[in-house]
Image 1 (cartoon, helix red, strand yellow):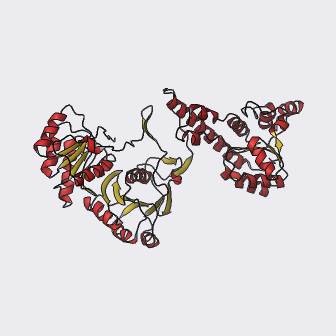
Image 2 (spheres, one colour):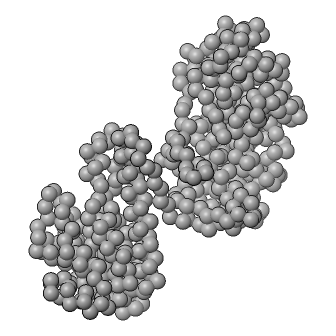
Image 3 (spheres, one colour):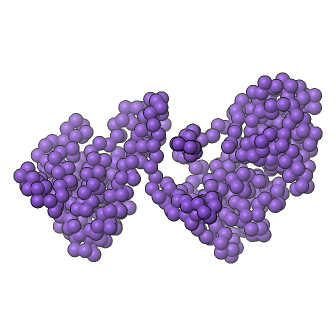
Length: 508
């Protein structure tokens, strides 16, 4: 289908001038609207304004400009249907062969702090999605572009085919439109649903980013959807697996808790060692000492450029993935000697923006906000007769950042800059504590003077007593048990310092 006439109306003007100039060189007549038309005219690119094309003025502050039979008729009529051709001719409808439209920046608008409902509503695009859908429905005859990244593909195809585009290209671009408009409508619905505090619906639409070899197990099919590549860049190694992606996500959320130089080791999304130190190699030693068996085949992440001394230490064990904001040249060269080891560059300092936690359940989805609650005013939350020392307070803050990322029931024993013992995913809190104590003992680490952190309250004194007997001198937990008084009495009897955060961190 040769492109003779194009309608261009875009919010994101990236690459537009160059694209339109090339279309004009190929003899394509350009129709345009509002700010897009002004830009093209200013750049010396001839175009017909939409009001001239339709014979009807733009009105209502631009709300009505492309909602016209000459626009949608020109997009929708079937080029091989004699009846359609006759009707189009009778009503003076001329074919539009190319539509270039991207939508008002609704998501960017509502992401701004303090945006009002009225401001958000003004960014709900009407004409844009309508034109995109009309063009996509008639993709056998009409080329539609919603993403500036596709400009070059369209131009290359036209150059190679005497101004025509291929059906394969038009099909791909049309599908992209429906994915885009579905996501756009979902963003609007979700915002209004939240803003108006209704329980109407929840929708999500994401592009397929990759087909995976298999899922959690080899007999399960799987795919990755969304924009994972905006957050991470693979520098080396095998393709990522389903489990790798889950672990990378868990590791990234954990490391985001720390401003100080920190190294964390994870296995099956659970931390098995975390250490902080200005020297990353020393931070690694602290993390690795917590558990020298679990890291085999695990995920390693740090929040500073990975150094050669750290790379040399890591290279002594088998790891699946290593993540860092960057890799020093010598470190990268050393690690790349392992051809299957995946090296991932974390492109975003904090993975903000993914504010929803979505889980599949029978018959639907569970949707909640991410657990981003930070510990505030901890000094005012001391509930025991003895307040914590400065080192105990530092350890409490350190442990609380970690325990929220461990599967419940979760117990972690920590010093002020390192983990000592971790108990994860147990049916009882006492068992989680016993496992953490056993892991520390197995690693040859003393719990004398340690702090114990619990993701939820101690329902009975026994868990706290076990921690004290293991050597813990302070505890941080949410509080809120019917037996808080008994737990508190057990702490005071053993001269433990304790903080009730008032916030729990269940993780299922």
